[in-house]
Image (tube, rainbow, N blue to C red; front, side, top):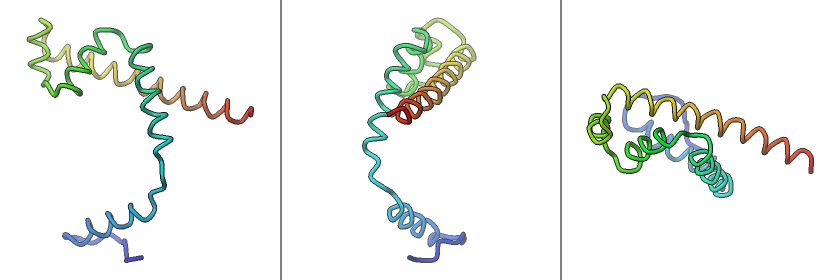
Length: 107
């Protein structure tokens, strides 16, 4: 394995890319579980307004000013609403993962 210590310049990026390929395990199962949990959290834990703004921002690539104009609110309101939705998703995913791990211990 090449030396992966920090170096300035373009060689560091190539070393890090090789390093991540070598240590990466097949995590398709974990990614699919994360996607399922994310969709569940979007449906159940996020308010409809937060969901709508987050989908416009992340899925459709609109900026906060455009979302604010479309929904009739200020762009700072859009920013706060998206941040609150993100925090709800983080809590949901964190606690959902803990509950999943506890259920696996019981088996």
